[in-house]
Length: 197
Image 1: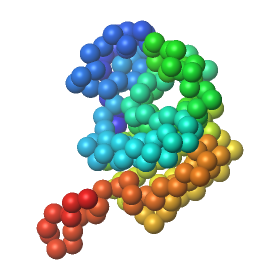
Image 2 (image 1 turned 60 degrees about the vertical axis):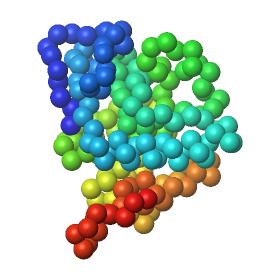
Image 3 (image 1 turned 120 degrees about the horizontal axis):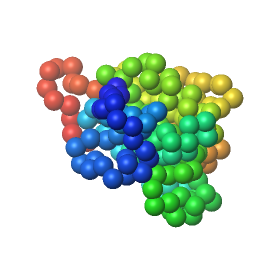
Image 4 (image 1 turned 30 degrees about the horizontal axis):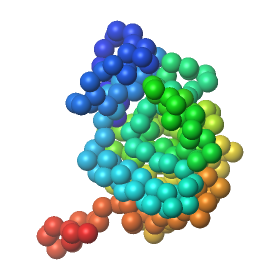
């Protein structure tokens, strides 16, 4: 869920000056909006980021990061979003490395990990914004149900169950990641703690 912080109007430059040690923010219509992620959502985003980079680094395919900020929306140039995970292909990386502010390139892939307090309309708004901006592939992950949705700019979508596999398609060639590899193990049925990984 996102929470508006104040009625004061902020700029993308103001956002860069904030001490973000206590909270992560997005900038929507000039308002600071706190992005709240559950521990589980952070864990899932980090595991998936690790899997993507382990696949991409030896092949020099690109770079994934978590919770970075992007100012890349043509219809709202002062908007700043913070996807849970974003990937940019290698051929596009030099331009973003030169950026000293928010990422100014549209990611090739964005991922949102849905936390229990996220509202459906807020999640849908992010999906539409990213796809309109030019994101080529988007994954919505639902740890609570161990499912995921794959979304594309042409409007096609696919629901994956817990046994499904995230595919990089033409964005991350040959990437395959079973959902069960990124979701924490389900609670043990005998009441004991889950087995360590």
